Image (cartoon, rainbow, N blue to C red; front, side, top):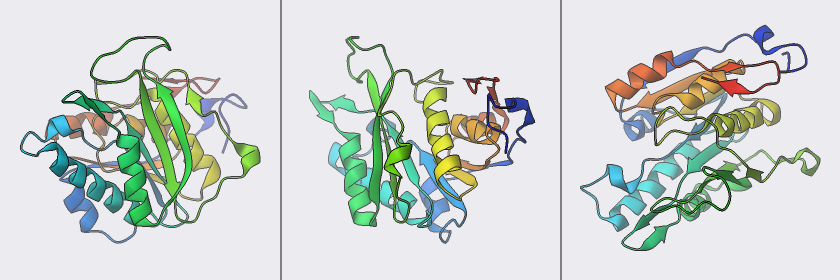
Amino acid sequence: MTESGAGGASERPEGQRTVECADARVWLEGRQVLEGCSAITSLPDVSEFPELSLAEWKQWFIRAAVLVMSKVPAQGVAIFYQTDVKKDGAWVDKGYLISKAAEEAGCELLWHKVVCRRPPGTVTFGRPAYSHMLCFSRGIRVDLGKATPDVLPDAGEVTWTRGMGLHACLAACRFILEHTATRTVVDPFCGHGTVLAVANALGLDAVGVELSRKRAKKARVLRVTLDRTGAPAL
C-alpha cells in the first residue's frame, strides 16, 4: 500500500463501508468477537440520556465501553475519543470511566493522548479545550521506538459539534493501519461517519452503527480525501 506523500494518496484504493441504523449495544450484543476488526468510537454524553441520573449514565457508559472492548479481538485495538463535561459544578472524567471499563474488560492501555479542541490558553466553559483519546488492547503491545506524539495540537475539522476531528481520526486510523493486522474499523456510535470516511481514505474497510436515521444517512455518504502530504479534508 502506498503511503501518503511517498507516491500520492490518489494511489491508495478506498475501503468499503457499511452503516446500519440500529442501537449500538443491541447490535454488539448480537455478535461474536469481530475478527479482523478494531474499534474507534465516542460514547454518548450524559446530555443524550435525560431519563438517566448521572450515576445511572456512568454505569451505562462503563457497560457500553466494556461491551465494545469485549468484541475486539486480542490482536485488535479499541480507541475511544471522549470529551469531559461539567455537571452540577464538578467535572465528569470520561478518561477515568473508560480506563475503569478497560480494567474490567481485561485490556491494557497502550496510549493516552490529549487532543486540543481549542488553542492552548483558551478559556472554555462546560467542556474543556481538549479531549481524551485512549487506546486499549488485550494482545497488542507498542514498540517504544515507534511512539507517536502524546499531544495533538489540533483535533481538526468536525462535521458536527459532537464529532471527532479529522486529525484525531487520522491519528487513530493510522495507528490501526501501522500497528495491527486488522483491516476493518468499527464505530458503533458513528454519528456523521467521520471515522468511517477517514478509514476508507486510508484503504481500510469500515462498519458504522448509528441510532439516528438522519445521522446514519450522512454517515453513508461522507467522504474524506488525503492530499499528497497526507493531510485530510472534507
